[in-house]
Length: 440
Ligand code: XUL
Ligand code: CO
Image 1 (spheres, rainbow, N blue to C red):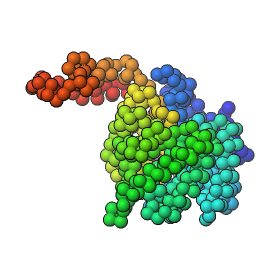
Image 2: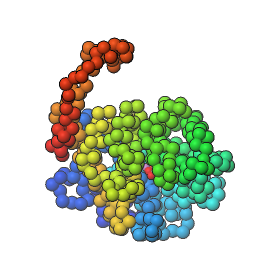
Image 3: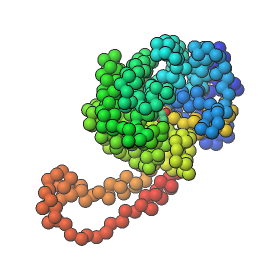
Image 4: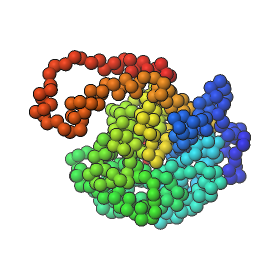
């Protein structure tokens, strides 16, 4: 198919289905590496990644920042009737998602349609647009990777949603959460995400942290119980972020979230949705966060983007750093991929990227860079001696006293008897670093 138009209007005119043409192609609207049917490490690229387009950045975000309004004029955002405007946006959204060949999308409730002044009218709007989404999904084959509730934009949540000190606001958040869970279940969403946008504090002086975190645990428990009762079989994900918009967010990083899930007995139902720029804001690398989550069996899903080395905020740029991505994909392959989730492009165009086709270039680059990095990572793991070198560093624990130590069979007295100065063993960091670059 060269030209796909769902609905009766084409928004991305002159751009057809984006196809794989290989790295020799100079067509900017073609994939150079992402061949969805190519098999790497036993799965097709399509299966490995489960790429998703983020509804909010791609079809709602016009480029506004704290210093100025949006710069992009969306041809689908012209109708003053919120119902028709939401349908137009969805036509444009599904046209784009289908043309780029992403199998999934992700949304917040009020990305799909504008929130109204009353909860009842907002819910009516959500029911309407999810009916339409169901049709668009059936027609296109595009699936829902995850849904979520925007529990941070409305002024009601200025002191938090589930962690708000006022119970009435917590209840309002509960009403909105129920609507978003219903919408996700209605659209056969494979997962449901909690990103605690304002679940944190601006000042400890006015905050009872223990009570607020208990309330968050209670809120997530209720969500789990309700959704399971409605037959939802998917995963719940928590998306860590250390700060922004609050000074401190309770879901600071993967390690903090793991502690929280253990404390509130949510380990069986929840996993982690890691985001690259959130990892770097927490002064970690994404690789670190992936190792932490995967080691606990909780590497659920990924929000793909990148920060800027010179900026200390969430710039959400599309991923371009092959070196970083290759290291991420090594961890991805070593741990058998993601549990239930996929790669969601939670990334936005720059404010001065104002052409409609920029959205294509951004996603083509992102998908190609993931594909290329996965192949690099697979080469490193299967063709180089990387895995052996890494395993060899721990060989002293594979047998004898080292093995007994690992198995908990040695007392400190026995360990002490074995302990003395020993020969230094090099960590070989520079050699490990060279292996990565040799395969890029
Ligand atoms: C914000 C962020 C969100 C979540 C969903 O930094 O990443 O878009 O992914 O609420
Ligand atoms: Co995100």
